[in-house]
Amino acid sequence: MSSSLFYRPDEKERFLAILRENKVQSIRVSFSGGGDSGDIDWVEFSTGVAEDSTENQQRLRDLNFEGWRTKASFNESLGRYVDEQELVTMSLRQFVERLTYDALERSGLDWYNNDGGQGALDLEVTDSGELSIELEVGINYVMTEPHSFNFGEGED
Image (cartoon, rainbow, N blue to C red):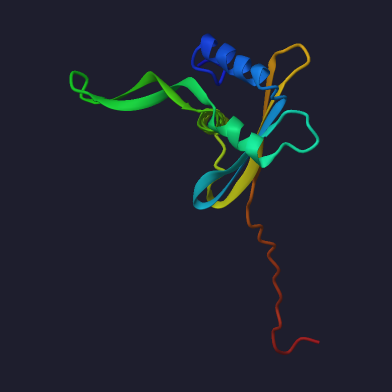
């Protein structure tokens, strides 16, 4: 398995190009889950301006991007479902969410069941023009601290 979250090298180059073209320095994706489900809470783009306007955030989220996605389809000759990749036009937000879900899947952490978890995926365009991707996940759990007392009769 490739260590990259990008399905093809050209996908990463197109992604970096659109970020550079729109002066995006970083992206933060927040997610949380619990019970038996999890979701992305928000995606925030940063251009380095003190306060990125709501309008600019929406413009960046809605930019068209051609990215690969995995689609499961039934293969009659094999008698089972197989994953196929297809190139589709999606919003930049949808593409970043795909990267996030893929990163979470690869982590192997159960951030969405039982007590759940939360975290963030941070994407940053470095000074050298490369892409740094870091995933932080916090897993929630209930801790039980047992205590036992004996209050038997006849003791002093």
